[in-house]
Length: 469
Ligand SMILES: NC(=O)c1ccc[n+]([C@@H]2O[C@H](COP(=O)([O-])OP(=O)(O)OC[C@H]3O[C@@H](n4cnc5c(N)ncnc54)[C@H](O)[C@@H]3O)[C@@H](O)[C@H]2O)c1
Ligand SMILES: [Zn+2]
Image 1 (cartoon, rainbow, N blue to C red):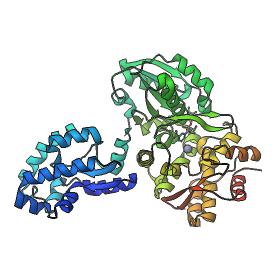
Image 2: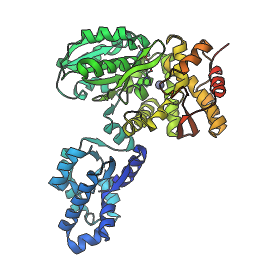
Image 3: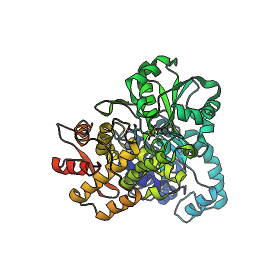
Image 4: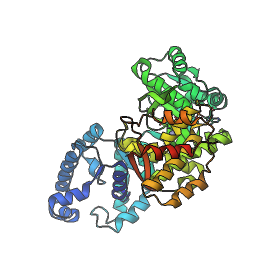
């Protein structure tokens, strides 16, 4: 009572594109009387019976939805049982004093006497704790919890308890990240750690040759977990190893780069590159947990950090908020939650998740044209965003001031790659359908449009504008 579940539930449903059932309102609609009247005229037991029925029906709806449960709903055994089978249950944390302040001014039958209210709060808390799959205090917290993402300064030291289960763990990192943070990860994993492995740094990790070495070194059984410590290249490649080794074992990315923490480590897409294009081989393999420790960014080289900001700017443009202006730990948490929402909403990338590719059709073309060595993913995404926003101004009615904001946040520095190679690579993008390039554009900050087809000349001109000479 008074935790803000109704407001939070409504916002959560909006972010996830799901319907929202506020159980108290549904009961009032169903019975035609207010809850206060129902309590007065029929008693609490009658109310609880209707409540149980309404929740039972809501949980049987075929499409996933967001439910806000009344404070006493968990007193019912059948409701607790149904939640275990059909729901991911989040306990919205609130201090008793704040809850009283909010609930006492409402018309809630069980919030009339402060002492009784506190007694009820204390009595209910252990029931909530037992039923909850996770706890959260705000919208981002709920989204992160639902996606299995733990964000916290110092989280690396807790890795041992954050990797789900009790089975054996193998740790993989690239030489640089392993050299800096490997020992701390090993210490945190303790007895569960059975082996450590290396993937080459950068896109070299995302090759069949690197994967073959890793596959043959692994000695995990099917209860094992592969922990991937590193940037997006390490987590993409290790995630693919986990998706395929023994036909799939659990994995936990521990992203250490800015790109990894706000994007690559989240959402279960894993991939390798082929000479002809990026990420052309891969699998969807949702991690058992994602452990994000923003403190690890302190050792990230300046260039990686600066260029990685492109994914932050992308996320901010999609969310319609200048997230790139936030201080780093908060920036990471907010961006991770935006990405998590897209991925929960569309885990297999069949619809709205495509928006996350804003700027990426161009970025992947530039990366492939540069042989994956000429420019980092972050730098390529920064360039791709310029092209996508320019086309958005010309073809999707985007206000030109947004393009200027981008130019301030990420100055455009053209890439030195071969134009023809880039143009060819652009057509090998996964988003090409029947030979037509399909782009993500922005109508306004917070309003992406996907699947946009434009005349070749327009796309070519936008790509050419990103290439030097
Ligand atoms: N799967 C997805 O959803 C997704 C999303 C975005 C990007 N990606 C992929 O991610 C890759 C790019 O990721 P990236 O930019 O993290 O590259 P990366 O993995 O190559 O890391 C960049 C460099 O920074 C170093 N590094 C990383 N963390 C460090 C730390 N804390 N301290 C010191 N050095 C550190 C690495 O050793 C590497 O040299 C691309 O292949 C891209 O396609 C995947
Ligand atoms: Zn990216």
